[in-house]
Image 1 (cartoon, helix red, strand yellow):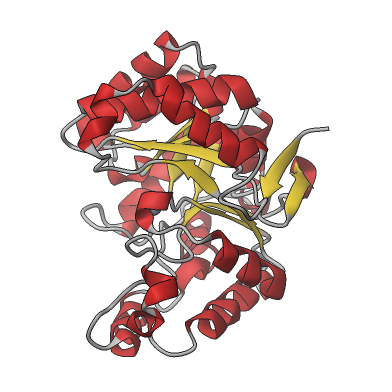
Image 2 (spheres, helix red, strand yellow):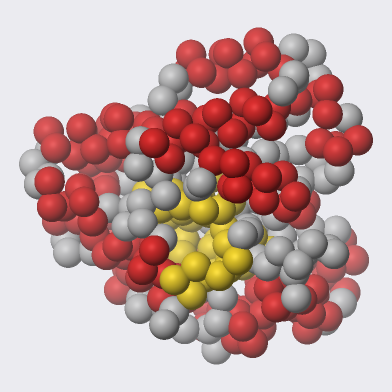
Length: 314
Ligand SMILES: [Zn+2]
């Protein structure tokens, strides 16, 4: 039986259900939420529980929170909102962009030890175990510090079997370099998901990644740069090419964030831009896919089969 670590304990992968594979419950500089809660507006926890409860009622079973420590991950918050909403939340270890410069001069094994501890023993003193590893490269490609983190993530994967999500820059095909390093470390490409892959419409590149065995996070919705409908047309092309089981659609939505001036007004503006929040997939994208000819059966597999396969390493 394959299991995945959620913030409330191990979950059978068969019970993941409808899974949004890349979201953020909260993003802020580390520690700000506990020390300066007023920067997040009033009743932020209640508002989060409300949004997640609504999502659960609409059929969202699981969220992978891709918030690393440098993005302000707060596991106690994840535990509270998961328990109160009934949505399974999978927490993340690893590192996003802007790794400290000293990372370039220490062994990946040393950093891997931290990630392994967060997977096997828990994060801080909480006992809450991470269920996914993360590393990042953007338009500058894999930097010296980023390379050390990537190798650390690889070594933690080899030790624990926990899969890897990669922040990537598909328009620059940066995934090719990330994959080469992970392969050099001995990582099975079926343990790797390239996130933000719908920031390009280059179906040839995306299919190449999946031919290597990797998964794709089509996790920018509504997103910027590429129009949402273009993203959906790309998704449909990948489904039609036979890769539905490798796709992990999601939003990369920031469900709460620090807004020094007027947090409530900022959130209101966000809601105007995307009133559906993390239900955009079900409310908008699935309708677009229907219009493009996807069947009910096709839709029932999306956000279910891909994430489950990913966590089972298929
Ligand atoms: Zn993200």
